[in-house]
Length: 343
Picture 1: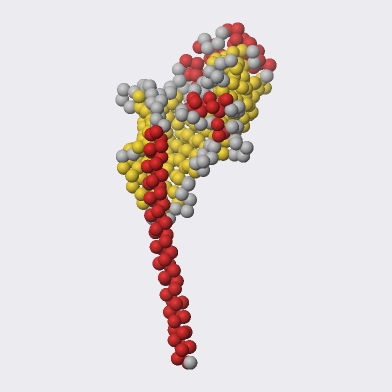
Picture 2: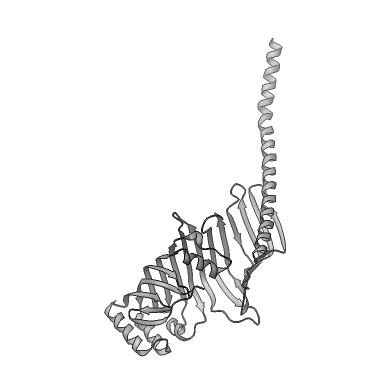
């Protein structure tokens, strides 16, 4: 009996010594198999997406693809990645590096260390360079998907022979989209200290100084904002009753600053903005004078707008309602130009 007890004790001792190592080997094998499966699944989904996109008239291609990142990450390096639209627009990344954690395969972070090349339907291609150019993507089935884009130290350069661009540089560019309750979506966009080739009216207002823009808004009927291209998506959203509620919108050009606190906007059948914004405008007389000098508005309209500004000014700031209706932008009773075009 003593011998049996001793033998049993020795077996338990060996099990206690080797058991954790056996479990670790099993776990490592299972994790390796899971990583290989995730790599294969990512490759299959990319190939499938390329086929589906091609069937709709778009293009999604790459020159080469390599997966790595074992054991905890799933990294993919693409060379010559290109996405094209039937309209003639295309975006190409000479090098694209993306990664996701194995335990969160739906959340991807990507960077384009060599910048981007954007092809325009007319005007030719431009190269986008940046000190930092990265983005994250998740919640692909949401409306809208969760997207964050950040670019620092941006430069925009037309390729030889291409037409010039309006914005040639920017200190920072940010874009964020989020899905919310009740079929709502949120969007935030910011372009800080942009250098722009402005002529005419805008050139007079900016006075050669950087231009900045930031907006924070919530839009309804988010799931309706989809279509074969941007115009068709916006038309579908408008027909569904889509409305953009502006929480903040700030634009500055030189000394002139427009700071909108609230407003409700949509899109008309002509593709231009409709609705109104309540805004504080700094140096509004300066902007009005530039409009008059450039001939952007008639003298009588400039006089009417000046009266509105004078009646609603406190110091250098005038609180006004900017209306977009019938294809025109109006300041009080004065039409000061066409409404901004969405498509």
